[in-house]
Length: 102
Image (cartoon, rainbow, N blue to C red; front, side):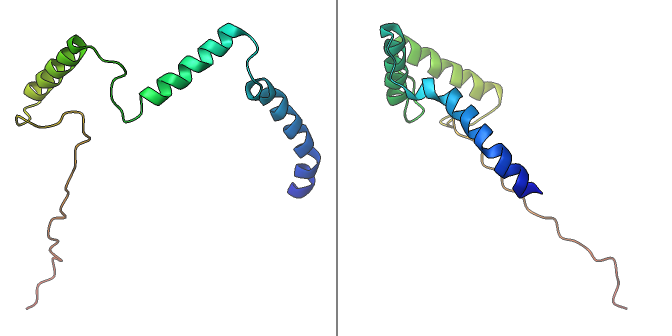
């Protein structure tokens, strides 16, 4: 039953998806559209590594002060990287079986 439905609907789904994706797969003919696409690609290349793109010294200074404020607010030790995900360590408490050996 499912196989029959897929064999009937697969060509429709394929045509619909190709119709939607065809404009995106073609090269941009409008110069403004091409400029936009080029800027998006340039930004994607610059933003690799999770760093700020083209930061000025003022922006870096403000970012550092904000991270220090967060560290003070949450009581972190000096030198702790606030941009890293915290690591957790859970230990299971000892379980007492409740049965005495008498």
